[in-house]
Image (cartoon, rainbow, N blue to C red; front, side, top):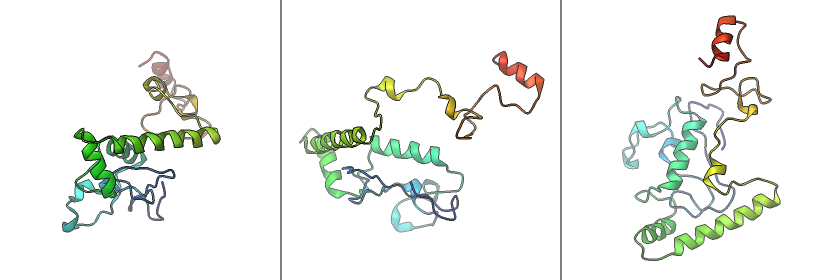
Length: 169
């Protein structure tokens, strides 16, 4: 993900580093998704302004949109026409070319991840973390904080607030 100098007024760009055979991913790895398109009125695009980038979007909304698009490609506006045709035929049960290419790319990316020491979850349970790791809590090593973070040890000194936290309120 790359951010322009005037972010958040202009959208970031997303580019996959590994090969990605997907209807909405260009051959060079860049992603074609409405939320990443600049907030300009373009009648030819077929997109309304409310589908495009606006400064209230954030990394979380971008990633959720990307995940959603990866799961449900937009084949009516493909970045990769061949992948779009193969995906449509695969969904219709007419051939398995799309599935074969994607499976090979997944296996290739697992090998690269392994070589680089990157852990890749293999099951739904491994993907679904029930509790946030400490490093993502308020006061964590990275200093990251957003409205979803919560920790009892980082209050402004308000004893009543701290007691409520300790009681689970």
